[in-house]
Length: 573
Image (cartoon, rainbow, N blue to C red; front, side, top):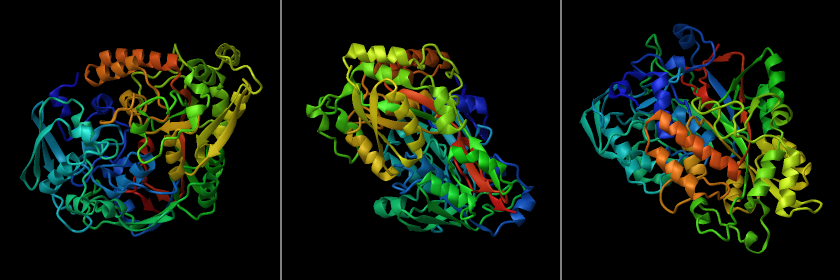
């Protein structure tokens, strides 16, 4: 259990923060550490940096960064859930608190906070900050941001504030939040990056013009979005009213501007960073990372953002279940399977697919060593549950896989033909998986789509197999609740269901976990849930990847923890 005194500011240590994020089911040790007044913003970097004075003197520069996505759908943090969008938003918005480079929760706009009782939080805010439009960043503005989120019935983050009873701006720099009940992980809900609920929007413009706000938001972060060309680039300019300073009191950010080029094609990204067209790549292909490491003009950081990769087999026939529409968003659920056999609804077929994957070989052939084999659901960032070789687990056993397919009645040549959906960045591992499944008689046709089209394809449920993944995930609640729980019409359960998996006992275990704060009890419940997941072969787990990020040798100070790319303290030598 987490004691009330452990939740107070000005920082929460890594051990407590991990428990809070775990209890809240949040994804990622993400965001910036410290901030204005606190003076530890520059600890955000995972690379060696100059002293604060030397870094500041190198300001006034502009860089070009590459983002491996073809379209930014959401800039409104009250709706965003995709990693690539969160990575950008961490530069544009501020939060009440954020996660430091050491994993502790530290203040962002909040300089300190106390708990008069276990259900009341009082935040002391830093002075002098403004929104990008010049409006003051004070307690009333933060209160309005919370109230705006609480008014959005369709926000995936609304439930994080469900226990809020009242929010009071006692003066310009004091904010009081009272809850109807004790919520241990509440402070972690307020982190910029993983929490999103505490990410501060400019409520008047967000409320009056939500579509325009989503396109060109008004934040209060280190950089302001000043220009964007759909599908091509975004222009970020340093925000003069940003409250953050470094340890020496120098104003942040150091950089004047960042042009973010949208580069969804991995080979194009590699060509751009290698040829000097960009100064920073949020991700380069693993097959090029070794070469990049040997190039004196490039630096490579391999980050493990708590990510997991899997193959998600369509576990239910969308024409036969009434919950398919609840995970689709705007996509149209297909009627393709109404008169066709869908082999993956047979648990023996799903188990065979999981057994056909040689994860160690996949790491070498598709990731060039930049990954770890995934034999279970819990990735290494969930240290209290992760096991390198769990028992039970998913392991390579092609002979057993073929026996299961025989038992299921799939004995032809090929036994079946299935379509595998993925994005360009998945193509290498898709090809390896395709070959592995062919060894047990499953013919796989690859369906490679750009990111924007991928989601519509996924939620139409036309593909029997989907390359699916999650990032900056440090708690099983995040992976299981939205991704694997039976979808519901209202609420967040099953909101991201890629393959229509449903098991009432599994659902019940997740509900029990959500209401449990004791860590040992949670571990026992989650292990029971995982056993059901493995028995049902809800997903065929593949790997826990490392994400190689590359930058030019003269660019230092980028914060790369847990997959994010924060440019608050970045500078060019």
